[in-house]
Image 1 (cartoon, helix red, strand yellow):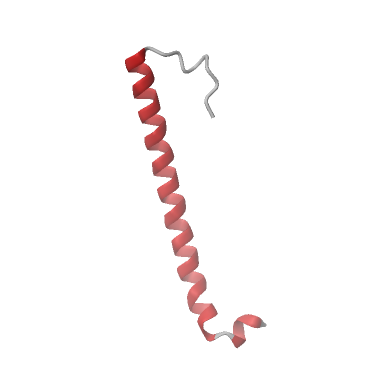
Image 2 (cartoon, rainbow, N blue to C red):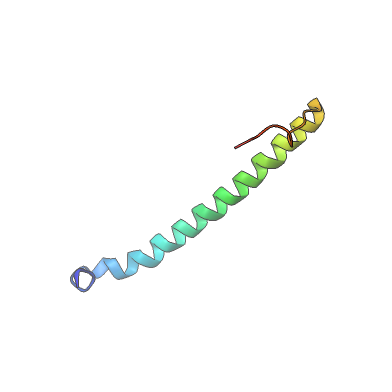
Length: 55
């Protein structure tokens, strides 16, 4: 009922959802980049990451 009294609420929800989706996409790509970077550095240093628990 509060949405009908606020004219901008209907318009903001799709924008908020789109912003959240973009943030999730960014976080996924950032996490993937960090994982690849960590693996590459471990390979250069010859660290056994499989034996070490990484977050």
